[in-house]
Length: 207
Image 1 (cartoon, rainbow, N blue to C red):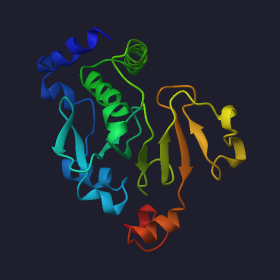
Image 2: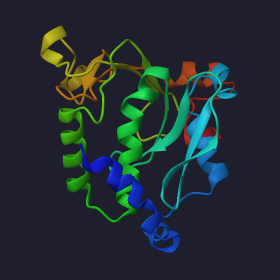
Image 3: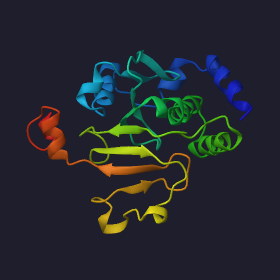
């Protein structure tokens, strides 16, 4: 997408006051806490963290293990803690960062998603090209703890992915047919809470 470089370069024209007013942003330290809760405990200390600031995502701390954790808002009203491995950080995460950059410029989500789709078509954005994983193990996210394996363009019908009543039990493809498709496997919240050193079922009440 030829416009990508120009759009990113235009960030300098966005004033912090204009940008921040579009969101009720959590403080950086709270963003860090929630972002890291997406990863398994043994990965957190070395994982990099991105936080939402005045012009999009900024590096709060660098990664020394290839993982990057953040609050992702693919849908504007939903903040989801997620932690990408090396493969996802080099591919899918770039579209996520672009999404927030354009939001802070004032673009509508429909426009941004169309630009991202066009970017995947013309090679400005890349789907994962090898095996990898994104962790969403946080008990504070919009969905139960789960692990997502990159499966670009895959569809449930191709491997018998479970939909309907079985969707919460068996693996399924999320966002099927797209470059952002994942094979999703839910993780037992109670088991994850024990692994993470928290009592109870890992719900918000156990914080």
